[in-house]
Length: 251
Image 1 (tube, rainbow, N blue to C red):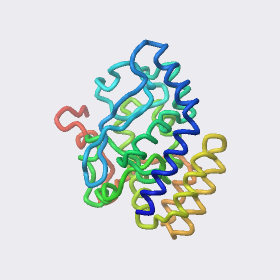
Image 2 (cartoon, helix red, strand yellow):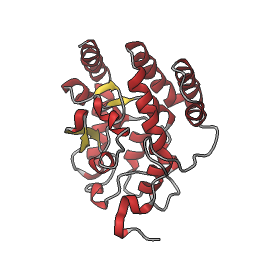
Image 3 (cartoon, rainbow, N blue to C red):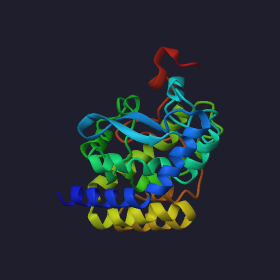
Image 4 (spheres, rainbow, N blue to C red):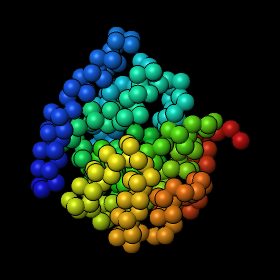
């Protein structure tokens, strides 16, 4: 109840405070192609229930028909206005509406698409035990997700091999150690990350140290080294193409 009250009050205040910015961004998106400035995306919420997440549209109309769930920075579907929106995380601000209505929380594991949650291991299903959030530890650590996937020939496969394993482990650690104090810290670090990612990562490392996180998780979260293919929590090996595409996988 305390977390829900916190979410409701803070999302209402932030929507009010940022309404001029959001209205300006909405107008800019609409003027570029005269279509709705919103992209209503189906995501999987608490206990596996789907909900409709509100995002400011950063891509061309019908971009989701391409069948690609992961987005790189050089994805041709991203519009000129969309690049600005993504740089300053304005598409995340619009999700305050989902927090206000109760589908999301301010802090929690990021909501995923049905295709991705269907691949969750039993251990990863713990991520669905709580409301998804606008930000969490992994959102700060992988705020450069688009850059990581920028030169990828297969963004979905590389996401599952490089990012998903650690994103899931960080989400599980958050759920096991969450508190209102941690939520406030993560919200502050999310704002810091827009201007100084390195400083935000130092703050994340302090959080992980306080919760006695495994050393391999802390090493990856510092983002000092290139990411390597890893197994998702509860799996024995990294994801391969056949896991995603079955008979359609190309050797």
